[in-house]
Length: 173
Image (tube, rainbow, N blue to C red; front, side):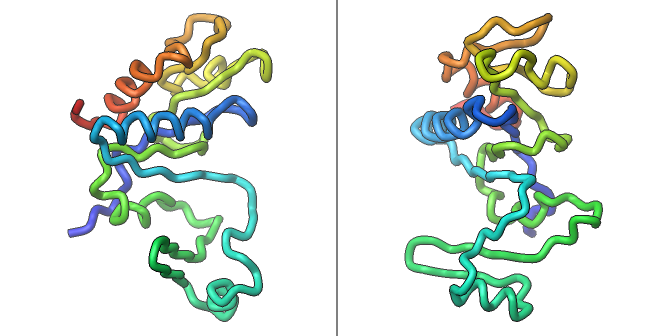
């Protein structure tokens, strides 16, 4: 039976240009090299077209196909319409495809209830998000944060990885 929720998720959050993508990619590489199966998702709050207008797959969707898929020898994708007003677990449809993952790293989505870690650089913003959001589990930075915040050094990738694995509930390798 396919899973109905996407567990094992850890979100990497932070403001623009703080290094979320870089950290997610470094963690993915670090963890996969150590035998973990890592899935990734990029969350965006921007409304934009993920498929290319004019391409056949896009035309399928415009014609009403939902879901509409594209399949090649090396990559596949599935597009479906989502009602932004509907209150539901937006990650649930991904659950079957990520079921075999040890951890799923999501870039972004500050509004989730799943565990979140924050990447912060003082040169970009004075205050980290966790200064006003205590539900963020820890701060990843090489700067001295204001206040009393659980911090892991940005250049200590092994420690960040151990903390992420613990948050995801994965077994250490």
